[in-house]
Structures are given as C-alpha cells and as structure tokens.
Amino acid sequence: MRHSKVFDPKFFHLFRRGRYNKQKFIADLIAGIIVGIIALPLAIAFGIASGVTPQQGLITAIVAGLIIAVLGGSRFLVGGPTGAFIVIIAGIIAKYGIEGLTIATIMAGVFLVVMGLLRMGAVFRFIPYPIVVGFTSGIALTIFSTQMKDFFGLSGVEVPSGFIPQWGCYFANIGRINWMEAGLSTVCLLSIVLWNRFMTKKIPGAVIAIVLGTAISLILNKTVGWEFATIGSKFPELGAGMALPEFTMPSFSYETIRELVSPAFTIAMLCAIESLLAAMVADGVTGKQHHSNTELIAQGVANIVTPLFGGIPSTGALARTMASINNGAKSSVASLVHSVVLLLIFLFLMPYIIYVPLGCLAAILIVVAYNMSEWRTFKYLLRGDRGDIIVLLITFLLTVIVDLTVAIEFGILLAIVFFVRRTMQTSSIKVIEADSVPATEDDDIAQKEDIEMLDIHSGIEIYEINGPYFFGLASRSEELEIRHKGDTYYRIIRMRKVPFIDSTGVRNLRNLCDMARKRGVQVILSGVRPEVMATLERFGLDKEIGREYIFDNIIPALAYANKMVDEAMLNQRNV
Image 1 (cartoon, one colour):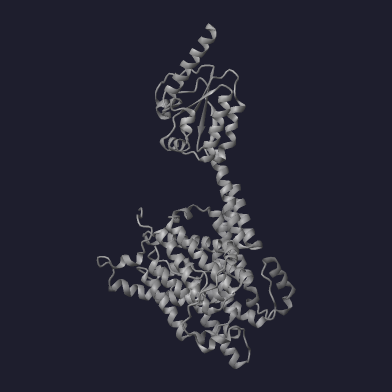
Image 2: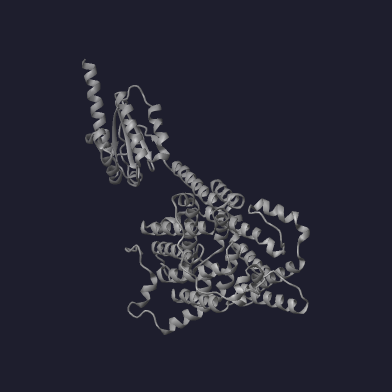
C-alpha cells in the first residue's frame, strides 16, 4: 500500500468513523498497564547502565513513549530507552558530558525528521542483515561486559570503558569479588531464566527478579545485617521522591555541533533501524501495516523533545511492543497508557525504587544482552557468502573493540563496496559475433522462432552492455578501445539491457565516443531505453553523438552501418 502523505499518525485514525470503542479501550488499558510494569525495571536499568540516573531512564520512557504513541506510524510500537543505546550513550557522556549527549540526541532527532520528510523510510529495509546482526551482537557482548562489576559486587573498582581493558581489570580484581553480591545476582538471574522458561509470559521474569531480589536484600539486611549495593546507595537523592522534570535548553555552539555530527548520526541510524525493524515485526504478527516515514518523523520529534526534559535517546522497543501485542493491545492507546503508568510510578513510587539491588539490575541486563546477541543467527550467517561474513565480523569486532559509531559507519561503507562489486559482476560488456545477432530485440521470440541471422560487415564492431552502466562498470569501457581493430568504421553499442546510466557512465560513454572519433570510428547506439535516453538528453550527449546515430534496435542500426561501410569501401575502390 502506497502512502501519499509523508506524515500520517496512526493514532488519529482511531477516531475516524467510530473505529474505536469501549472494548478496544479496555483491552488497550490492560495491555498498557502490563507493559508499563514491564518497562519500569528496563528503563531504570538502561538509565543506570548508560551512565545517567534511573529517573532519566524513566523520563525517556514517559516522554518518548507518549510522543511516539501519538505521532507514530505504527499502531503498536512502544517507545523508550533500549539496550542498543547503552554503549553509544556511555561513550558520548564520557567524552562530551551530559550536555553533549543532550545536543547529540536533539541533532539525531533533526536527522530523523529530515529522513522522514525525504521519504527515506523504505531505504532502511535494504540495510544488509549482516550489518544489523553484527552491531546488535556486538552491543550485546558490550552490555554483558559492562554488567560484570555490579553482578560480582566489585565496589571501589574503576572499570575502564574499552572491552579488552574491562576484562583485564576484571581478572586483575578477581580476588575482590563480593560473593554475597554475586550470590544475589545469580539468584535474580536464575529467577528470570526459570520464570521465562516454565511460567507465564504475561508477567516477565524481570519483574519477578526485581520483587524477589529486593525482598531478599531487605530481609537479609534486617535479620543478618548484610548490606547490598542498591539504587539508593548509588543515587541517595531518590529517597526524597521526584518532581516533574523542568524544561532545559542546552547551549549550542558551532564547534560542539560539528564534533557531535558523527555520534548524532549514529544515534539516528540506530534509532531508525531498531524502530522500523520493530514496526515490521509487529506488522508481521498483527497483519497491519506501519507508515515508515511517519514513524521516522515521530522518532525524530521524540528525540528532539525528550532530552529537553532530561531524557536520553529513545526508539521503538521490540520486546515491549511484542509484550503489548501479546497482552491484547488493539492500538497505540496501549503505548499511551504505558507512559501514564510510568508517570504515576515516577511521581509516587520512586522512594521505593531505592531498595532495588544493583546486582538485580545487572542480571536483567545480562538477560537482555543474551536476547540481543542473536547468536544462532550469527552462527547461521557464518555459513553464507564470503562478503557477508566479512561485513558481519568487521561490524561485530569494531562494535566490541572500537565503538558503535565507527562500526555502523564502516559497516555501511563496506556493505556499499560489496554491493557495487556484486552489481559489477552482473554487468558486462561483450563482443557480438557475426553469427549471434538475431533479427529481433526479443530474446524469447528468438528462441521460439527460426530467425535468419543478420550479417555483420567486417568494418563494423558490435558490443553489448548488459546491466547498469554506472561508475562500477566504468573501467570496463576501456575494453572497447583495447579490442579496437584498425579496419573498423562503425562501432555499434547495444544498450537494450541497460536499465539506467549514471553521470560517470555518461562521462565514460562520452570519452569512448571522443576516442573513437579520433580513430575515425563512428559510434552508433541501439536499443536505448527511454529512461537512459532521458539521461543522455539531460547531459546533451545525444546531440554530441548525433540523433541520426541513435536507433531503436539493432536491425536499422546494423542496416545503416552496413550500407555506409559498403559505400565507403566502394568509394575507396573507385579512387
């Protein structure tokens, strides 16, 4: 289905012709409450793991979730912070601080809005799968690595940011493991795994782990006096409760904007890929269809507005979206309710969040990392094409060892290189021999009928270009000159199988004609498609070649060339 509007939020479709009713609202209300409860530990965990406060994670889920629900192009997408952003957020904060993160997020939002307005939503469907799996798996491994400190209770240890230095630090401090903290973390981890495996999926294991881990922590603290690292010990200010965040505008400068273009682009790309991927999965489950350009604009607005209230980058969250659908959501109202639930928790229950152990949050994020890793898909892709394997491994390793910004940029660049290479392999320039030219432009008819083959004069060369004539094929044009015969008068170039020609192709065709003209050879084009002809006309090449030397198909082109060569040879004999 083609959308004529570039911006067409699904939320407003609900109120057309009485499509929304009480039964659907009740279903959305129940689903939204459940998803809000599910999103609570994830928003807090993602906030802390990203290097910001838990309330900033919650603010992101509230504000971004609300905006995406109202303005989004999907009926079911639930927005908020996700694990994919942990690595990039932590890196930006470490280098540019919180204000740098705010500016980068706003810039990313602007990029997303522009992408949507330019109708680039469909483009993201063509991002190679090995790139997506490569950086997703790399992010998962990085998240897993960052959680080892809290999982094993390595208090007082300054853990470096790089993957390899992190593990060097962990092994160097293995003797400082707090086995009490590690034990509680393990219990929380097992509770998530076992609950998700054997119990109902209506209530996720993360919620059970939060309740169980907090209860164990409080009981042991009261009875035995054991103290565990909790959210409250790391953020003691939360005990006083939270007020609504204030609107704050960061200070923009040319230098800051210039430095943050690359990380902002990474945020925008990651947001676009993750949100549209989640929307497509939701479409497959529900049979509905999202509007990708509208979704990009909504994601952009969310990332422009959310940081102004202290939030961090947000996107469509696949796990929460599927939880919403599985719990009976009928529309984006469920996502709206999810934001309201989180807002109520933010205003009234934050003093109780301080008792949640950090080891419990680490266990939750380890499970998130495992689910993100797609290790089965990673293993499957290793059986594929060598080019795909190279893209997969390089994207993965750059994500883990360097950073996500470099990984995405280099991965996309590498994928483009391999795409051009493969396209070049489908394009070719071949010599047409005298006994291989059928008297028709239709190969199917040529195979079905007994067609007399045309004769090619000895003073005529015929070459055929198969496939796109673009910059990737440009160097092969030199083959025409290398194979040039001294007694050639006319060179016919068949272009019936050329679907398009770019500016580099036009340039090389012009050079080809100029070199041929210097040798006294006239170039003739045959079978030029209308779209290719339009490009030649825009560049004026049709006039340079001469419209009289451009034919609809090979028959009149060859007849003309044979006639002119015969006349030229006859004149030579008469002289």
